[in-house]
Image (tube, rainbow, N blue to C red):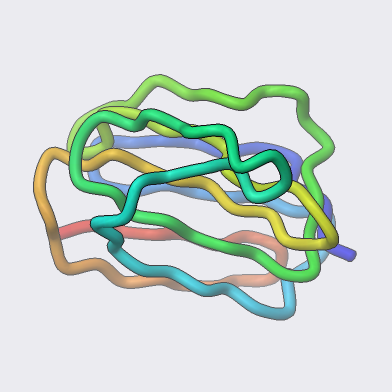
Length: 111
């Protein structure tokens, strides 16, 4: 199990640091309404929705929302249930991106 230790948001990137490497990383833009995976409670995120899932993973942190920086306007945890950890990010616009994985760190860079 990979445990999330921190998220760092920079002008054009987000860095997720885990205790170990998450086995699976799924990512996508979505136009669907966002909701928490366990409760179904709506989650509001300003901007174009980009969602990233890490599996098997859990959060070791208590934060649920983050302030954006640069192209990332808003961020909220949308899932931390049954080894699925997901965060939704609101971007200024739809952008091409690259995901790089190095050990226990996952970086999403937007162009």
